[in-house]
Each structure stands twice: as structure tokens, then as C-alpha cells.
Length: 123
Image (cartoon, rainbow, N blue to C red; front, side, top):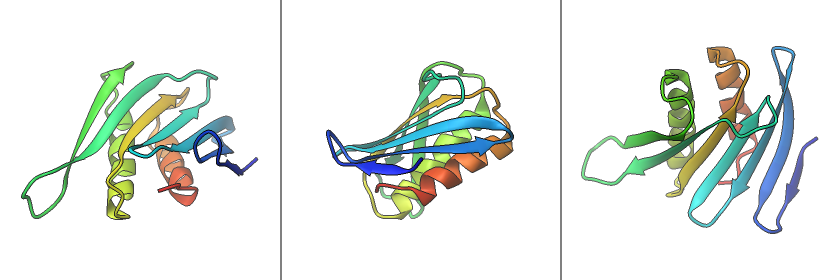
């Protein structure tokens, strides 16, 4: 089911099948943040924060940190980095808060999450 609601904040709820596992994704657009929650376990899981670094560099740099959860999963950090790059390249200055409650941390799963969020973006 795909629906957009504007109260209390603009958000979309989508559900995708990734390798036979139902994955629920909620994308919320706040004034200063984008919140993305993707879960296969019905819980929030690892929470990451990602932002574009401000500076004088020719090419943008991005900062990704794990707030809660698995700190030894580089694929989760890579997922957050891909999403903040998408948000930034579209011209949005907002930071990303990403919650990943996943049974499967494979590259294919995370690529599908990134593409699903990008296709349904609210930035």
C-alpha cells in the first residue's frame, strides 16, 4: 500500500517484498530532517544519522554515524550514505535519520531499500 498523508508531517507508507521478506518503509519529511524507517522485524533496529558536511571542498563530503544499534555493519552505513547523497544531490539541505530493522543485511536488500525510498522521496 502506498499512501501520502500530510498530517502531522508529510509522509509515505510503502511495503515491498525483498527476497520473500515483507519490508515496511515509512518516509517522513520534517522541516530540517528526513526520517526513513525500514523494517522487516516490526521494530526500529539500528538508527543512523547522516548529513552533508559544510565546507569549502569542491566535492561534497558526508558524515554518517550510528546512534543506536549495530556498529559493526558497514552495509547499514553505506545505505545511509547512499540516501544522504540522493537527498543532497536533489538540492535539499536536510539531514537524514534512518532506522533499519532488517532480518537480511545483504547488498541486494539495502539496494532495494535505497531505490524504494528514492522512488517515493519526499524531499
